[in-house]
Structure formats: structure tokens, C-alpha cells
Length: 399
Image 1 (cartoon, rainbow, N blue to C red):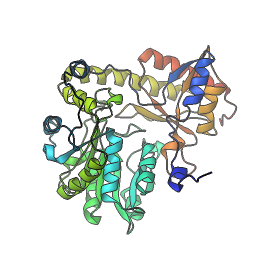
Image 2: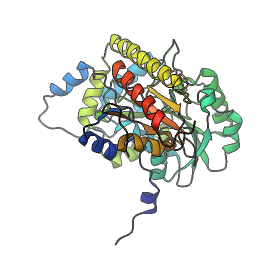
Image 3: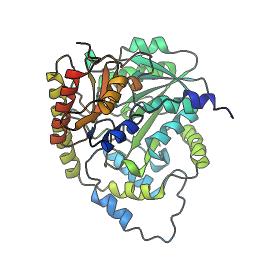
Image 4: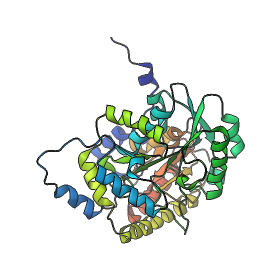
């Protein structure tokens, strides 16, 4: 039998999606599954985006420009201008989601064996993107006790070596919901300037900030304009995950010329996705106000519920729509599978993402899970009740 590639063997399974067969089996047994494992909001996609697709009157669905439809990039640049991010359409390359944009960035700035520093826990697919590009992830551990604040800058500096090329941060953070402050970003700016590194900023959750907090973009940092790479997406902003449209942004002209070559190699981003995304920019502010209010309520239900459970702890996130919770369990992978295979309460169970998959350091996240509060408030209350009942009878409970 022909061999499988080393890269293929190294590619990790998604902690978010690998338990899907168990969830499907549970549903076939008649068990209701509350999906808290994936960042798929139940918020409606703006009508203006849906209508743009429905009203498409072209006779041919053509390739777009490899960097994305020009009119979309111009309109997108105007969106960023409103957020005091001074860019033009030429500073933008549209990708098939933020995922492809991150791959373009990795491939453009790093050779196989080069290193990227990432605070962990981090979005699980960063590991997969790194393996795809032949890049080595150097994790810097953040702690649940601090709410997953940026680790001490000395930890970053101690990890910088001759092959370190970049630091990657997600702000607000997936999976923790932590919102980095301007002061924390300033410490990164100084480090990037000192060692002439790239700073990759995944800011796809910029609209989701709570308790009066505001998002600070890495594009606002002075003196490192050619070092910053902004990654963004329409998936969460407009609850349009399936359109698969994101972007890579940088004022570094040589970098963008290089990234465009990778974009050309895959021809073009999705045409219908761009049509929807361009129209979505006209979404009224009232949409975001309603969505933010809804997520704020959902967050409070989840955090309060978990912190009432014996032996459980969950910090209060300031952004995104995730929490990482510490539970009295022996192994998060085993627990999440057990929930689907062996447990139900009144015919209901919950699907969570084991946090072990959001770390690069072996052994981390074994007593933690990521919860996406993307369901309505009543469903979240019910799912938290189910989780509490599960913890009471789980055979691997540690407290």
C-alpha cells in the first residue's frame, strides 16, 4: 500500500469537529445534542447580504481577480478607514476565509522550519496551518487564573531564536474570549521593533467586545507598519460562516506582492461569497447593537452557570463568543466523547470542544473545555443544566 506523507500524519484532527460522528450517533438514538463545540452562530445573516446573492443576474459565474473583486476591496478599505485603519484596496488580498489568508501569510514570510510564537491556548487550526506551511509553532502559555491575559513579555523574548519570524495573536481571542489591551499590544510592538519580526493579528471578532471595552487593532501600532499583517473575516461579523471570505491586509508592499503569487496559484476566492460580503458592508449599526446585546446575555448565562458548578471555574471574557472553562475532569477528550456516547439527561446532552486541542504543549488543557455561546439564552440555560448533571455522574470526576 502506498505511504501517507509525514505532513499528513502530523496534521492534527480538529478538536471542534472530530467528535461529529459521536454526535450524529447520539442523534440517531433520539438524544438532543446542544452544539457548543463550534463557532457557528444562530444569529441571522444580514438580509442585505442574502438579497445580493438572490438578485445576482449575471449569465456566467466568473473567476474574480486573484486578490478579490476590485469593488469589494475598495468598499472594504472604506470600512477599515471608519475604524481608523488607514489602508487602500491595494493593501488587501481576499482569501477563502481567514484560514486561507493565514496560510498566505505563513507561506509568504516563513520558510519550512521557521518559527512563529503564539500565546496558548489558541485557535486549534493554527497548528494545522503551521504544519501545512512547514512552520514550527513556539507556544507561550497563558493561564486561566489570569483570565488568559498576555503572558509576560520575557516569556516571548526567551523564545525568540534565529529562526523566529513572527508573533501571532488573536484579539479578541478564540478560544478564551480575552481582549488584549492597548498596553499589552504596546509591549508586543516594542518586541517586534527590537527583533524586526512580523506581527500577525487575527482580529475577526473585533465587533464583539463587552462591558464597554473597545477593540484596539494592531494596525494602530506606530512604527511597525511594515511588520503588521491583519487577518480578518466576514464569517463571524455577519454570521455568514459558509460564504468562506476573509482577507489578509498589510502595508508592506513586497509582502503583498509575494502573497499575491500564492493567491494566483489558487486562482481566485469564491465569487458568490464576495458578492455577499460586499453587500454586507452596508449592514446597519442597529444589527450589531442587537447582536452584541444578545451575546452579552449569552455570555453572562454561561459564565454564571459554570461558576456555580462544584469544582468548575470560568473567567469572564471581554470579547468574542467563547469561554474556556476549567472542569473537575480527568481528561477533556474522554469527557467530551463520554457526553455523546454514554450520557444524557432527560434525553439531552451537550457537545463541547476539548481544550487540549487548543494547545501546542502536550498535556495542557486536559481539565479544560471550550464552550461557544452561540445558542439562544434558553438553550444555553438548558445546556448548562445538562452539563452540571453530567459532571455529577462522570466517572472521571476529580473533585
